Every structure is written in structure tokens, then in C-alpha cells.
Image 1: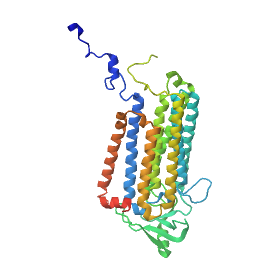
Image 2: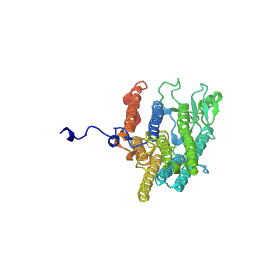
Image 3: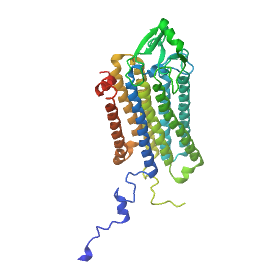
Image 4: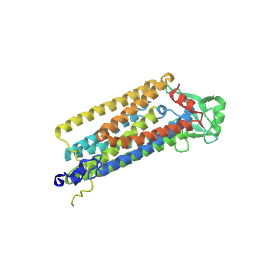
Length: 292
Length: 127
């Protein structure tokens, strides 16, 4: 009788492989490298969330005197007028399109089509380069500011701006806007008061004429706006720049035929994840920095 | 170089055929269309209503909603998170949602210092 006892409790190696968590197989059907790329992206998302949340907090703390992005980013190449946010929308579209070319490169990799991977990868790299260039262009305009500029008052903090009609974008000569509450950065602000005539002239006499924005002053209003702008778009732009470099390295590896030898294009998939993440972050920056 | 059998370099089901590829490419184009359309709608809405005080609440809620819609499209289809196993989706998404909840909570609590939670929320949504 004992000879007929079936051997149920002695799993072989192949039995292990059948159970997802039994060892001998990847429980998530995913390679180590790809999973770690995902974990890195989650941690990177934490960083960006922290930055954008801090931005939102400070922005609503200084709601009354915070510049409207629509009044700041009005430039468009080869056009000397006022179009709100059109160029940023274009940049967004370029990045989304380059995300699509990346996903097409990954898809071509799944079919082991080297030529197609090369083609879509190079388009992705071009899209990324256009985006970084556009960002540099936008920084240039933000740093150089407008022709009329603004006045940094004696205290070195308060900015006295020209009054501009929000609908017609026409500047009212000799009329200025000054934040009502000027006694220190931590009190709650309550909008602007209009200053004109001799009062304005007296204030101008001791003020510094400034153009554009940098880390210490900002023609468009609170310097904090410029600080956040430089830091958040700069940090994102750095991600895009490194993404373009990484994509280029992978592109060279594809051209060399390295992945034909390995038998799969997983490397393209991993850099693809990073690239899509850069796009994902921009979608949020676009909304929270420019639209809202 | 011999392949190591203790390192899972690549998932097994990642190669696909020509027809499957065609279907996937079509799907990507639909996602691209949707994302571009949403961006155009957002900019148009901003241009039309950003100076209209009465539309402020509606704009903020819609913009945040549309952004989440775009983000979902990118992660689900472009990053293929939708094709991963359920456990993996949870591993990626849950910690993130916990952190976001935590950050929002911090923001609202800290808003006490600069004016209070209710004014902060009311101020934000223009209530």
C-alpha cells in the first residue's frame, strides 16, 4: 500500500515556476531593470509633487499680488503682439507628440524592426531638442522682460508696475500699481493701489528701473513667482535635457545593432518610460503654472 | 556570454506580431488625438474665461480634472501601466496617492498659519 502513495508534497523546480511568488519566475512578469525604472519614476514624481504643492501654497498665500501667467508669457516667435500662452501650448504639443513617437519606437522594438525603431527614436530626440530650445527661448524673454519694465522701490522688495488694461493690453501712461501691504513678506497681501502724478514721480526718484526677472527681483510682481518658475521649469528642463542625451545614447546602441544581438529592445522601453514621465510632469506644470 | 538563469532580464510576453502592432499604433493615435484636443480646449478656455471672476471656480475644477485625464492617458497607454499586472499597478499607484493625500493635508493644515483652512479652500475655489 505504501508503495502507491502519490508524491504530492514534493514540488519540482518547474512547479515553483508555476506559482507567481514561488520563486523561479518574476511575479510581475517584469524585468528587474524595468521595475527599478518605475520605482525611480515614482520617487521623482514625489519630488515634482512637492515642488508643485509648495508653489500652490505660496501662490495662494500671495494670491492678491501673484502675477497671472497669461500676462507674463505672451510672446510668440516672429509675432510682435500679445498672445497668451500660445507658445506654451505649442511646447506641450511638441512634448506630447514626442511621447507618441517614443511609444511607436517601443512598439517597433517589440516587432524587432530595427529601421523603424531608429526612425521613431530620432524623431523623439528632435522633439525633445525643440522643447528644450523653446524653454530656453521662453527663459530669455522672461529674464529680459518688457520694454517698459517696472520700478523696484527703495525697500528693495516692492515692485511698482505700470498699469496695463487687461483686456486691451494698453499701458496707461503715468499710472502705476503698488501692493497695498508692503511691511514685510509674511503678512497677508491685499491687492494693489493705484499711484499716479507727483506721488508716483517721488517714488520713482528713489526706485530702480528693472526689466524682466531674476532670482532677486521680478518685473511682473513677486520675486517668488520667478524663483518657482526658474526652479520648477529648470528642474523639468534638466530632465528633458538628460532624457534627450539618454535617448541619443540608446539611439547609437540601436544603430550599432546591440539589441538585435540581445534579442529584444527592452532598453528602448526603459528610456521610453523615463521619456513619458517627463511628458507627464509637463502636463502638470502646464496646468498648475500656466493655466491656473 | 552565457545567459544567467537567475536574472530575469526580460518579460516573456513582450514581442508581438505585425497585426497586433497595427492595432496598438491605432490606439496610440487615438490617445494622441485626445491629449492634443484636451490641451487645445484648455488653452481656449483659459483665453476666453481667465478674466471672468464668475468662471474662476469652474475653470479651476475643469483644468484639474482635464489634467488628471491627460495624466491617466499617458500612464495607462504610453507607459503601458494598464498592461501590467494588478499587483504592480498597486505598487506604483498606492504609495503615490498616499503621498499626495499627505501633501494636500499638510497644505491645508499649514494654511491655518496663513489665514485658515476654510478661507484657503474658499479662496482657491472662489466660493
